[in-house]
Length: 306
Ligand SMILES: CC(C)(COP(=O)(O)OP(=O)(O)OC[C@H]1O[C@@H](n2cnc3c(N)ncnc32)[C@H](O)[C@@H]1OP(=O)(O)O)[C@@H](O)C(=O)NCCC(=O)NCCS
Image (tube, rainbow, N blue to C red; front, side):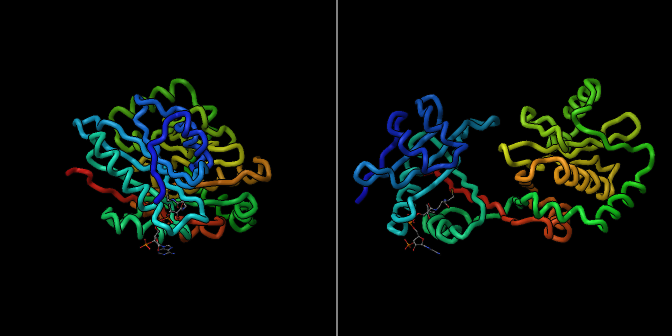
């Protein structure tokens, strides 16, 4: 039987290839105060499996929640029980650190049935779809700039009363910014679609805002999540100023700028909550032809209380 070991900073570096690039830095900072657990398995000093989790104190009570960040077994060692053993060992370790509940999010992939089997055998909750994640290469997106679609966009734009203007988010004034910050204090929707998250990554090329008279009432904020990827993150129009077509107008404009101005290799990604029905419908009915892939994200949890 293989040995499962709780990794320390000096041993963890050998496991970097076994997790997503984004989490590799966690393996370089595995100090006791970091609330990160890494458990590895190796064969003749060769790392062949890794599970990584983090935990935190909830802000409303003293409950400690944990989240599995990644679980990976080298392909040639799969289907030997290692994945399940790593998960089980992690559950025990999190429990011993006082965690009450653990969660895991994953994207559907050809590998999902295997993962779902392990989760089911380990008594996790049935996975719930939480979001749609869409991917498009620029080549695919480019098909959105066909003449009949541009014509449709122009029609939508003409319907927009003159009191509305679409502007580049990079031109937002300090005063307008302050007004949105104040609005955030009282408006849960503005908080939920907060345009200022991950501000250092906001993409100036195609992030747009919608002004009504002298007030900002909507935005399409995009982020540069990797050198070759623009993520369409926050699409929002205040409910009193919808129909949906106003947000769609911003989205399509933003896509067209992407197609026209971004370098050839720049991809696009979207994330939409599964309960945002109008947007989910729009993605399947209208956006799908310009996407390479639509994948669902799932969430599952397990209580660790004795
Ligand atoms: C998910 C993963 C960690 C599983 O590792 P593993 O060591 O193969 O898992 P185990 O051997 O413990 O269990 C696999 C189970 O799935 C079953 N299985 C294998 N292929 C399957 C399939 N296509 N459909 C259904 N079940 C399948 C196996 O029979 C086994 O069940 P059993 O123990 O009842 O026989 C591994 O496939 C992996 O690294 N995948 C890529 C990364 C990933 O998707 N991680 C999860 C998201 S973070």
